[in-house]
Length: 257
Image 1 (cartoon, rainbow, N blue to C red):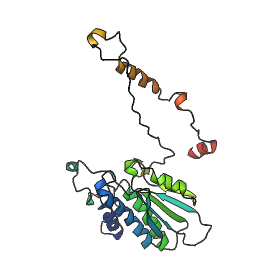
Image 2 (image 1 turned 45 degrees about the vertical axis):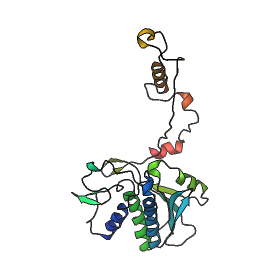
Image 3 (image 1 turned 60 degrees about the vertical axis):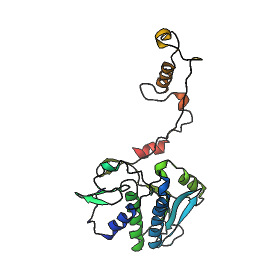
Image 4 (image 1 turned 120 degrees about the vertical axis):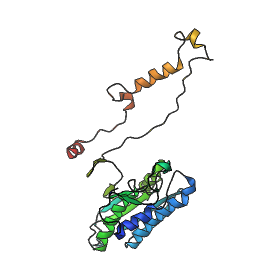
């Protein structure tokens, strides 16, 4: 991450403090650190004049809080902000030029685990809302709902939001890619992931390949033929696997264009 100002500014010092928390969700030994990173976010929201709490959602910590619109109007729209405060394990450590949990600036760039995924981006959204609130110029309610299990594929935040009847008028997520420096990607959808364990058996017992090879059906060949039929050369899934897909509406297509 490239800092936009000198590292001595208070905002960056705050970010450094957050980055020093080794909130590695994949390692149970860092469970307290994951919770600590969530509580850090809640403390910042409360310090900015908002409300916040660390919610234990079926054993997973969620940082949930809100900064109300400066006008106090009940009609003010609500913007939901999502981000995650957990990080990936930093191994192998020998490939780091500086300690992963000690933020370091080199040649104008900031290096630390989590600075680009996703503490850095989430911090920017937090500071933007905080500064607007301090100036009495926050035009919307900003509701934060953040988790500490994104890096382990958790589903808690989805279930929590589905159960939250308050809803929101829009959602902002700064956890994506950059097409190039200064050009962020605008994602309109993401692919899901499914895992299968497939076992193919073509005979009752092992056979000598030198004697029976070519005559008996080979399990590996059967598997390869099956897998190659799932995705044709042109890359479009067969209709049977595309069942249930909802195509984009004309209004959505027009907006993308």
